[in-house]
Image (cartoon, rainbow, N blue to C red; front, top):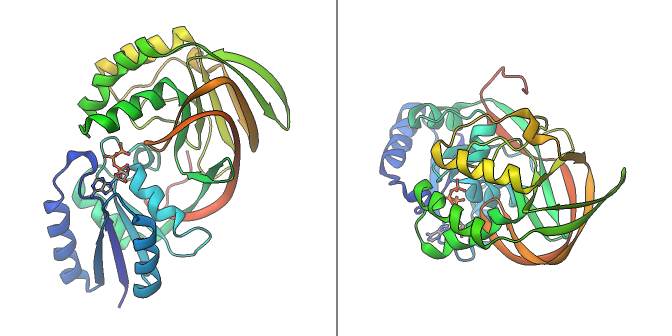
Length: 298
Ligand SMILES: Nc1ncnc2c1ncn2[C@@H]1O[C@H](COP(=O)(O)OP(=O)(O)OP(=O)(O)O)[C@@H](O)[C@H]1O
């Protein structure tokens, strides 16, 4: 009998998880699989999950939450064959959107439980220490993430509330980007490191890029672009922006960033702290994520 471990973040997105839990129980009866729930607590979740994986030996692990919960599962299944399912139950679910995971609960549970197609996904590694699966950035967005986390309001509207404040507080940064291809001097209000093309809000930050190409995109946000982004972001979250906005993007396998001062840094919605130096590299095909069958990469 197949064993499925559901890693459930009870607080993600401010969403009640009862319906998801009921549906999983109901599917388990219908499909006859064995399952366990592992509830995250926000403290020592890595240790608890590693212990559960070693003990239960699941055939698949389903991350039920936002990007942070997917990353928790991913970093504990690094270079393993065990496929990861995603139940998008976070505030924005940028990664699930990027991977075209269905956004209705019945379909998403069905895919996570029964999906047979998995796709290799690269992970980002920052300063040899922190892993990321979707998006890391320094600057104004990280400041929003910091304030948002402090406020305890986990809904999208909570995120939006912090946009203007962070924008007013943020200052122009100057940075040097070194990649194997060259060295660039830039300035802007934010520098994003993207394994994918969209923010958690659904807003595109680069038009190229894939989560399985061994490359990541460095996107520099200059003032005018940022203002536009924020204005548009406040009116509607699912947007496709003008291609012109993405001219300042570098694709690379590794990079070293030096900033003129210490700036807020976040990875996948987790505030890390202030940094003035970053090394970034990729772990290619680090994990397998269950996606809708027969779909080619966009
Ligand atoms: N029981 C809990 N109580 C408080 N915080 C928790 C708990 N479980 C997990 N967390 C925290 O939740 C964060 C991860 O949240 P996650 O990214 O899954 O959802 P989200 O932030 O609502 O969604 P999104 O990433 O889509 O914006 C981590 O910071 C983790 O420490």
